[in-house]
Image (cartoon, helix red, strand yellow):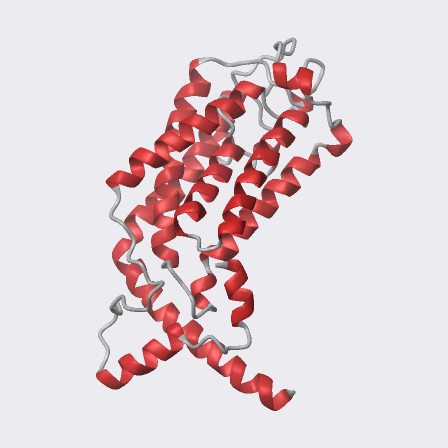
Length: 290
């Protein structure tokens, strides 16, 4: 068993290293948009924190989703977050599968560059929307009588800039239309729809998006309108932004040229490491995940 595992581990490590060289090369050329996207995630969090200072609790609005879906209750509201975390982690792991699998269609750096572009465009629209009109939050900590529903006037600019992470993110109020959780969920699903290879997983991903929508409403984190607006806005954003971005090189047929200069001998080794053969032990896992 030990003698068998050792060569497989060595092969996996060499494949990881070869992929790492390529991804570093791409990152050196494409880092600006990636960095801008990551910085904007902080700006988005800062905007959500800022609108909390404007939030005023009040009676919950009439909502068809609240009428149709039973309330999960404060003790089960975590289910929505756990389910979202599963979706996020699943996509994150899939995006890094080229480091371990011989069968691959994407470059990790390029896929996250694309994802961040979709997120930023959607989040800009979200910030404009929730600052335009502040609705009374339906979440438990945003209702009348809760100490967290209103934020006291900040003592300094630094207090605002630090956004009280992670407490300030988890217990925010006022950033309702439209749902940030649905932005991430739909961007991930739409990205896998285009670049994933497993039809059954694509269908399952859409089912998960629907379940996530229902859980958000049932846990009273958002009004139904926040989820509905997210569904058509994010789809439209991805549709139009995708047309403006350069298409990703397709690696699935193994014919795309390496992004690093290699000798003829190195090219052969590079092809073996990155594309492998269908008999590799760990590849059955990759076949499922990709």
